Image 1 (cartoon, rainbow, N blue to C red):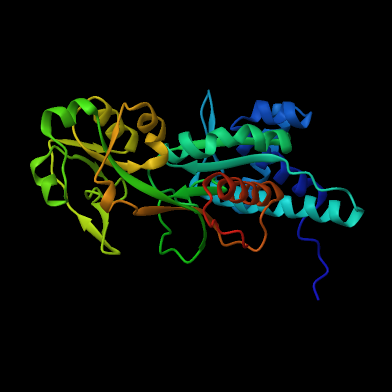
Image 2 (cartoon, rainbow, N blue to C red):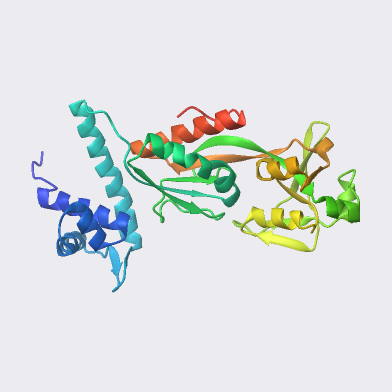
Length: 315
């Protein structure tokens, strides 16, 4: 057995400073946080780059950013350091405290109407966790981008990701009273051909998202047509509907207040009741940091309580 040490104290310290610089995107900020000089952080990063023969950061006069290789290395090092910290605390009997930066990507409607309102509660329970929220409807690549978690409208085919359902979000077709007074109220799916339907294009494929209905217990897709098309943000279609542009199908939780106030009216409720799922995604790793585990459990519990849905509570 080879008893040679693979990492010495200097190298481990360099890895810690590298991770700190990557998280803060600044040698100066990392130095201040670690209580060392910026030159010490720079030397540590250079030491790692020389050891591996690759560039970890792209440096400019104003900022630094990780290279692709640097990002992949950062993800593995951050996970490994987190495991060491957890192991030390467990061995010493110290109560584990969730801490560090939590990076989450989520789509616009789910961010504004579901998750963002819950974050102050999570932070009150775990004040040492710093949350970075990326609001976008595009799919992220965990292998290329430094995210811990992602929320999306459906589970991908990627077997390297764990998908846990947050809820089945009910869909509803809405329109403004002004539009319905002008164009009439459709009484069937077939009537939609005579109406202005606001379209939404999927960001992942660019194809038009069909509308979903339920008739005789069977779910059916219907391709609508219209002169308004939105992409990238579902809320754009809601704004158009509020303005009298036409009919739009969206999540009930997005327009709940509009329906209560009468600013929007529900259309075709007799064939409604369909839904689309929202799922929480994260890489299939052997060890999740404590902050990620705490956030996963918190989100699933809170959304299950608030929606009454059967959110997945199993790991």
